[in-house]
Length: 384
Image (cartoon, rainbow, N blue to C red; front, top):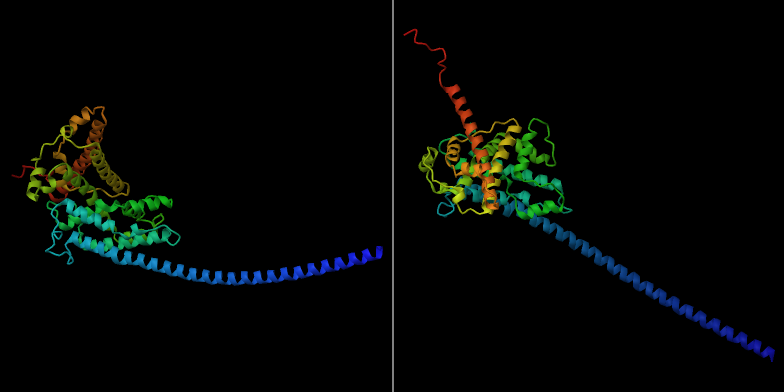
């Protein structure tokens, strides 16, 4: 009986081992089949990945092509149209109502279009567009800006002229708009932690380092390009600080509607009586006016710090001087309300600009007299 049980146990154990072996073979086969499926799937994924990479590279290249088209095609086309509108080039259709610029706002609009379409404002700041690319964009803008302007700059770089012509107004307008940037460009700079920059700052940095082999800063190629037009860049800054106050008076008074002869009368003292305290200018307007005036003094200070004497247009300075705007009263009793405070800040900034202009014109007149009038200090009547 015991022998029978033992034989039965052995037989059952053999059957179990055989069953387990068969299960293992089946499982191994399933594993091999699964592995093959995985290899096939991996191969398919790899092929798809290569296709995706190829498509991504193609898309990136096409995106760059579109960007280059914007920079060298559409952007430059708009830039070129606005430049020719400013200077009256051949592309300005004489039958178009925009072909003739009649007042400062027209010039500022065109000059704003020049800077708005400037290629540096297309900088993206992504992994394909670093600061070197931004430097090249600034350099390209400086090249076409000054290359197109140079023939309109008089070779004596005269600032104090009696009757500004179209070229004078165009260069002055571009000087005013040198710091114009789009909100998108400003946001891109902030996003990538790049210090705020515009063409005005680039020009100042280049001129500050004009006696060095390479001006210090992150945009060396731009500085080099600007220094190729050093005198033209300085001239544009000179007109900027003269033209900005006239732009302001165009907002406050009817200056922009007046002819050259009528403006001469304003220079002689025949000016409209405007009192800011009795005006209806809002706080927002007054604050903007004040910022414009501070740009004037900042540009003059920057020139002085570079060892460049600010030059003044006597006609413009005379008109500024004669426009009282009730500033003496405002400065004597500023008031406590936000509106009165805004009026006071404007009057203070206006006084600073007028003071600098008056002093600068006086020095220029003195130099003129010393140069052109004979020295009569030794003249006596003894020989008569």
